[in-house]
Image (cartoon, rainbow over all chains, first blue to last red; front, side):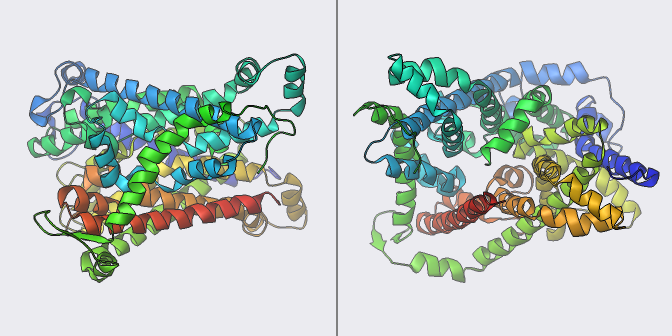
Length: 282
Length: 294
């Protein structure tokens, strides 16, 4: 700050408080709605203070689910989402870190074409090639399975780039010293590179976990058995059926349940999250 | 392309290390994309019995199709709306946070979490806020004499998805603007202050121009986001309606392919979308190359 201007300080806080309100208010309203009974909306306006149906609504969704809306118990869907998100995050990191290792620490024919092939995945988001990808997965018999949810989205150009950039900054001497001491490539990778990449892995894990958790179109297409439904697609089913019944309290409880886990991850690991976000875009 | 000065010597190990990534890329990315390109040149008769090679007929038909042109227009309005709204607000918040010393962190925490909310969930949050019968915003708007109904009014529907998509993107833009602002040298703003420039003049003549690389980068990212990552928002709220006003390209590909089962035209749409991603990615990487010189 160059000089002290009380009015500008006041304006700064005003802008930020309005910003925070704008960001938080929709969620506050959703939470309030989720603690009311369905009849509380009949008066025509959403209440602004919590109701007394918190445990009733959430307990009902978590344990029983809404079978009329084709939504299994939320506990099951949350578990599915968790499994899917962790598998996607771990898988992306695992296959990316070894490909980056190959690209940086070896010289072999086809190295550059391999790099470009990985790069191309950036240009082919699932949304633009859904139909043929769906067909491939169906032909491989991977519909309604965790492998079908995870494997087709597991290749990652961003993660590979991040690790490549990071490996390039690791001092040459590290590897020379390891070689002098007689360490082979795998030993060097395990004992030196992996420990050095710890923060990068953690930061990337957060970004990829959120990406995995928030998958929507893909799970919607390839899961037809409620047993494999994930929570983000589940709330949409809930919304489209319950909108007619005016049961917004349950819809909003579902939205809160689906959104809470990744939001908590960001709030509690903010430093790593920011690092991951900024680094992956370099 | 760069490697280490000294490298490990092994004939097969690097291929083993690359294999998982490459196999998945080939099976689930390259092969389907090639299929889409191939199918975009074919046309199937309604019973799926005969397939003919039709060259660019699917493309020309698409570009004559008023529905497709409408989707292009909707996508344009939507992307520009999301980008301008989200970046404008984020820049304002970033400048404000950058003025603060200690409380900045507190505000940052409260501003960054919407990044984690799934697009579909963000859509539903705003869909509830704007719900014509119980939503709080239509209630407030009714005092101004405006009757909000995104199920009937096309303009309302597109405003709804723009707001939902921009809301979710604020945290991302905010973090990058804060990083950009922190790299503006303090000495420049101080020099401007000594020359008598007030806070607003300093911002527009010194800080904002220095921020332009960040702004440009974010503009590309936001357009990409609005075009490809907002499927969930549209699907959960308006499903392309009313009367196709929110049928953006990425949603139309899905609707035509999966619900309409129009293979050829849907594949042609996929190919056009891929071309758009390619252009955006190239622009983005050109920017990164330029940034190195700063």
